[in-house]
Amino acid sequence: MIVPVRRDPKSRRSWLLAAAITALCLSLLRALYLEKVAGEYTSCHGCYLIPALGHDAWLLCAMYVMLALAAWSPWRWLAAIGRVLVALAIAAQATDLVLMRLFTQRLYIADVLRFSGDAAAEWSVARAQFFSANGIGYAIGAALVLVVLAGLIASGRGSPKQSRILLVLATACAVFALAVSWMPLRYVHAEYIGNVVEVNLPQGRTRLFSPTYAHAQLLAAKREPQTCAAGSRSGRNIVIVITESLSAYQSALLGGPRDWLPRLDALARSNHYFTRFYANGFTTDGGEIAAITGRPPLIPPGQNWYSLKAFGPDADTLPGIAHRAGYESAHFTTESLDFLDQGTWLRALGFDHVEGNENPYYANMPKGQFGAAEDAALFGRFEQWLDQRRDPRPFVAVLLTVSSHPPFVNPRTGEIDAQGTFGYVDDQLADFHDALERRGFLANGILMVTGDHHSMTPISREEYSKFGERSFARIPMIVMGAVDMPRVVDAPFQQSDIPASVAHILGVDYCRSPFTGIFLDPQPQPAKFVVQARGDNRNRVDVYYDDHVASYLEDGDASRWMGEPPPEASAVAAWIDTQRLRNGSARDER
Image 1 (cartoon, one colour):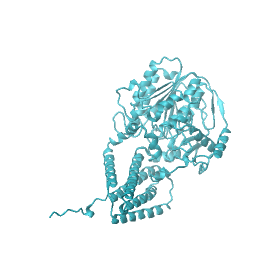
Image 2 (cartoon, rainbow, N blue to C red):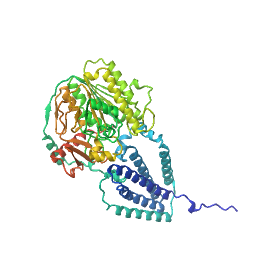
Image 3 (cartoon, helix red, strand yellow):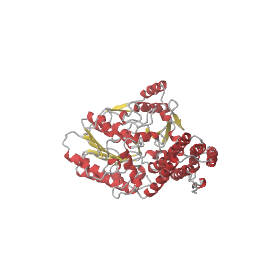
Image 4 (spheres, helix red, strand yellow):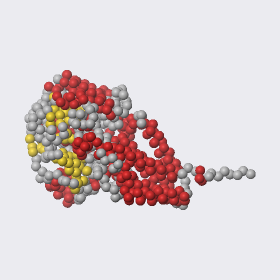
């Protein structure tokens, strides 16, 4: 007689318990990484591990309860729902950890929805990491997580014993989370400490203003004093290079802990540079919005992101200023203009000439992130355009680089190497300056070199101890060529001051508020307030004044100052709220 072989339940692989262990390991890895990077730049070692685990403990508690339910439930459909929800949570944990390591950013569903429209562009950024020296570790980790997720979803009902084990783990997590909630923190970015579900809960910035509140803020903002002037018509050609991730910490001249830009520092010393120049946002499109339109990239109320369509066209954008002065306006980059529909936006702003990686000049060239040829090709293409140009009008041109986008793949070697990447950028920017100088451009033209935002990397302890909260926005600004201004500008300026400064030197009328400065002048006039939209806390807008930083928390009608407010606090708040309302005037219809 043939006796059927029964599988011993004790020898069965328990995907439920494997999932529980995987979730715990991902939480530990996130907490350890946060302890390393945040503890380093705040000199608060040991401050972050336990709080991060405490926040994750609530999520683990919920996941373990769902797994216990899946193990105990007599209804297969209910057990399946529990397993799928836990699988999604584990996938979110893993993605969140990867994004923290790559970009020092959390997994925001709003970001996923905004950037997922171009999967090829996203893969062009991620593939460098997965094919790097660390790629094996990423591949093994991803494979293990995927195996656990597949096993969890496909597994059948568990056992009462597994259910009891999971409930004990859930209880332990709840007790731990309650105990940790009483631990004070000296300094922390709340959105880094919170678990992946917490950071995706409805945020203050998504709360709408009531009509009464919005009307009152609009009226208060209209009372802000305006200064209008035309400047002096100079006839100068102007080139503005917005450099991906170029940050003050990379410059020894600017007091940074790294000496990665020696040639650029040398050019700065022999021309004009700013010791306190700031980005208004934390993304490339935010930097372009500020530099091209003169408006801060603030997220409008009721939305998770702004739309590019809300920023222009306008007479006070760079193209608008150029046209009023009788100039041609041009925009060059090597990336695909389809990403975020940038090409449509730039043309709608009024740029006369817009080109990206579709230009025949880049045919057959190696393409990297966002389908972009390296920076050397961008500068070569602009030099070709300059040599072939027959338009008698002077021009304003914006060049946007891509090669130094995270994860910092050195174009010379193909390796992930931040120092080597910015060494390459340093050489290309200096070589571009030299090429323009040989052509005689700088005898009657101006070259500005700045960054798009502080790089998406952890702030070093040295930088934070020296510059505090301003570290998150410090970028270089170097002005070269035919311009009369101080060699060293030791006053606060920002990207959104660029259009007003260009209007000033082109002799075009421009009205500015206490939030706008002018720097292409023998006596630069800084704004009274510099504004920066934070990336680590999307609900927070920092305002720099004198040597202080005030933080405004966006929360609908309950929007308020955190800590000490700035001078004229109500007027500053009204201006910020009004800018947010203005930025919500158009929605992205892609």
